Amino acid sequence: MTGTRTNVAVLGSTGSIGRSALEVVAASPGLLNVVALSAHRELEKLVEQARQFRPKWVVASDADAAGSHDWKDLPKGCQLLAGAAGLEQVVRQPEIDVVVAAIVGSAGLRSTWSALDAGKRVALANKETLVMGGPLVMQLANERGGQILPVDSEHSAVFQALQAGRREDVRRVILTASGGPFRGYTQERLSRVTVADALNHPTWRMGPKISVDSATMMNKALEIIEARWLFDLPPEMIDVVVHPQSVVHSLVEFVDGSVVAQLSPPDMKLPIQYALTYPERIAGVAAKLDLRQSLQLDFEPPDHDRFPALQLGQEVAREGGTAGAVLNAANEAAVAGFLRGELSFTEIVPACRSVLEQHDFESQPSLERLFELDAWAREEVGRWVCT
Image (cartoon, rainbow, N blue to C red; front, side):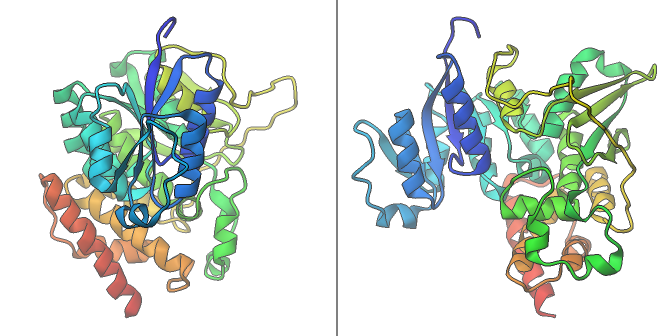
């Protein structure tokens, strides 16, 4: 990146990943430049960010909220776009080099699809894109010359560790999991956890949906599916280990027994920066690991009985087709039900399995079919909640 300037669009700029991405841009020595920002409902914050970074475009993805908002403080020369069409339009702009895809959930798939269709590099924080449409998305990237670089700390770690050897010499990749706030809980104690308990993550500060996914370990199930498509790996080559310190972000084991790991403090700014500046590494604002201090690293196998989401993730990774879209949508709906007090914590994963087993599986769905099943799965969880 020496002597070059990379123009960046940050989709979901008011969320935790988006805010971290903007910190990375602000700290870069003139190498990164924000040209587009988007938010769904936090429009005051979006305007505040626009005044700081002076992008060419801002997108309010909630068209209704955009229509009722007063945009008088938007910087002069900054163009306002609205709705899902606005997102798809902005990522195709020729000025944009990299799109940070940080919109949470299935809502981020279409804009990511459009960015790849336009041949962009996508710094992917939205794992649901590959969970829902992994084969279609990877095929599109290959055909259009797009590139996906992972922002999830685990997949960024795998991406970095894979550079230590030849792909044909990889025996397996190992995704680390913090274990969430309920790592040592009994099944009986899990049945009594509250929303506040689930949102109190021991090492990461995340939004409500992702925090609950970490507590159920559904986030790791989704990451297994994501890794299967992102790295073109059979599911049996993807393992999970619980590592409560969240310092080792993932590992790659080679056939000779060598294990290569990526270590850093739990700070999302590092994988974000690496995705934005790859293949270069530059000094940045992410926290640094101080190995002059005492450090204990613990690893333990996950308990599949207490956290059945992991087995579900392996099954869906093997099945492919429509299974990922249905699991993702069912989980989003079930987590929302839990946050509203309509489902208990221990009902989230069974609800997902129930809906998954009911759906008519297709091995080669279209993108539109995936969205149809996304809507269907959400409705089914609603009926599951009412029974």
